[in-house]
Amino acid sequence: MRHGVRNGRSASGRSGCEGYEMATRQGKNESSEMQEVRQIMVAFTAGDSYALGNIWRLTTKRTDFYLEPVGVPGGLHLSAHGPNRRFPDRHRFHVKVAEDAVEKATRRSHFMYHKVGPRGHEFDGQAIAPGAFLVARIRWVWDLQREEFRQAALNRGPLPEIGAGQSGRKLSSILEPEAAADLDLVVSYEEPYWPHERGSLEHNARLGPLRNDAGMWLTATSYRRSLLKHPSPDGLTLPGPTADEQPNRIMSGGPGDDKSADIYWFVESITSRELIEANQDSSD
Image 1 (cartoon, one colour):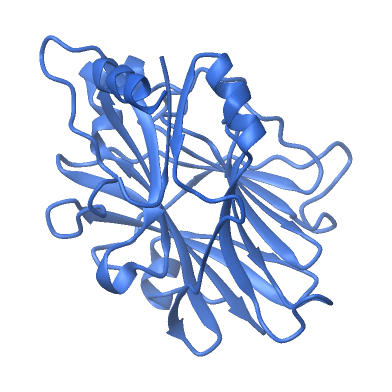
Image 2: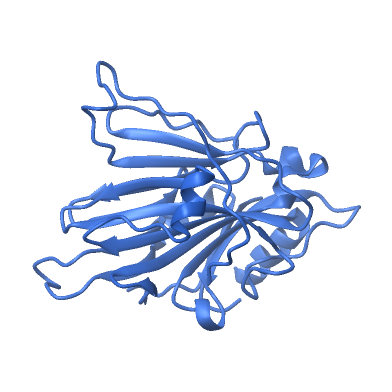
């Protein structure tokens, strides 16, 4: 694959907004009116199932926003930095991978392969309105919900605690074949911005907003898209398992193709353990 990341164990298309089922808890003795949310957890499920694929964490901290998969040992995160003392006139978006964490994960039999340099991968974001930038897309493909792959897709890590200043959401609608659940993340100035404002509100497809100390906002909108009409970027979807192979979940990340090259994709999907092990051997 070109620049990007893969992790596993040994363009905004208007195709419809999908509502969230919310599971929100506040910290002890905190009311939702009094407590400012600084962190949001997002999970993908099949109805009432456990989380399928990674649980993702969105955080606001000082002048920055962070996006990272919970419990992934490879030290992967995407950050959106607002103007600060070092960079007073511009924002910066970039992806970084901690190499020491990758080495530690590999020793624990996790598969982690990447081509992100030591300084990370910086990108511009896709301007979609004045002062608003589409930064990232998290995609969960329909294979994760298929009955024959459900056990492989399950997230077997501990569920994150939701305490003061945190909230939790899940996307639980059942996808049609060859469909995906997408979460599009937008960073904006002055006020929160949601693409397809009316549809996202009517379908309860909004997540956030989070606000940072630079006066920037982070929002997310949930979409259900056809993989045939809106395919994932080349190289971010591995072949599915054959009948005689063992299914295994995997997350791939990288920039998009063509007009979506200025956003970063994270694709949660199913491949085979045999293919992962073959790639692991070739990357050693």
